[in-house]
Length: 129
Image (cartoon, rainbow, N blue to C red; front, side, top):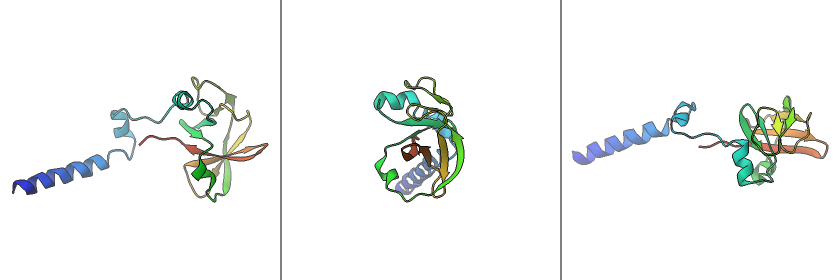
């Protein structure tokens, strides 16, 4: 009987803990946040990043570059540059030029494409958890 109670309680704890990160509310309560531009640049100073909808997107990720993706609609463009990552907001980039158009992709919601003079560059959103 005791073993059954321990298994039951363990099961309930696993199920409830596995369902807490879906809407972001529980994540915030536990201090889990998406990486800031400043933190990304502190850990990798040469990273090519921009911010869209409060999330940092980063280029140069091998597996993202290998995907077969289709550029969809323009969703934003770069409006300012910032090299140190301290005052990043939506539309800020550290390498992309002001005016660079950013597109969604048809196949995935976590990858965006920047249309540059040197060709399209893929960016993956950086999230915790």
